[in-house]
Length: 245
Image (cartoon, rainbow, N blue to C red; front, side, top):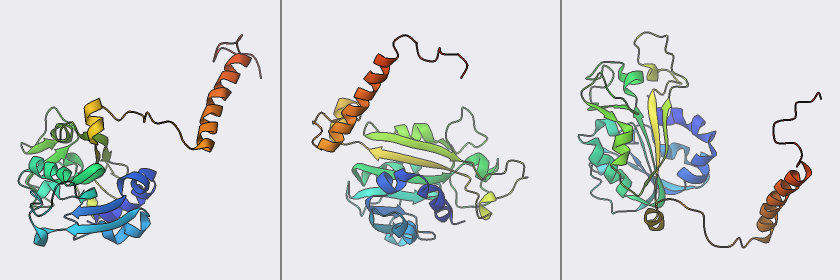
């Protein structure tokens, strides 16, 4: 219930969401019941969020959307409703611009379904998800790590997190998403690499000189400070001084 809304306070405490992930023009797939757009003003670098739901087309294909159209794509608890989550994820990633981000939430099979499938809490769930398991209690379980690898070489996996901070493990079987705080999910953030990063095999530092003089002076000062400390403390190796204070 209102899983996107529950995520907002947590995401606001992480500067990456405001400064990197939710920047520019975005697409919120399956967001109509609880749209990210309601909270766009809290993420100051969002320009616009388009909510995409059933009436807009099939979320598995996004056939109406051209490649690399959005700065970010967000989806909260939609992937588990698709017939083919692998194909769906690839199409979601397809419409992200190079340098942009894909941010998704899915229910964790142990925290949400809790050993029962078809789901006791949502009969439309077609799959369950785990970050990674050698063996699952569900034959229709999807491991997120291998699934993300299917996105290919231009996928930079930034974050895969089990959202268990407010999960109460001592409760009996119960849908904890009914509470105001229980998320019971997995959050994934993937950045689409630009062409040069794919060719170089990573996101390497720029080779361009630092043009900003103030920045250059301060970065050099950090190096000078480290040299000064080393020169002033040649006789005592680091972390060997055990004398009384």
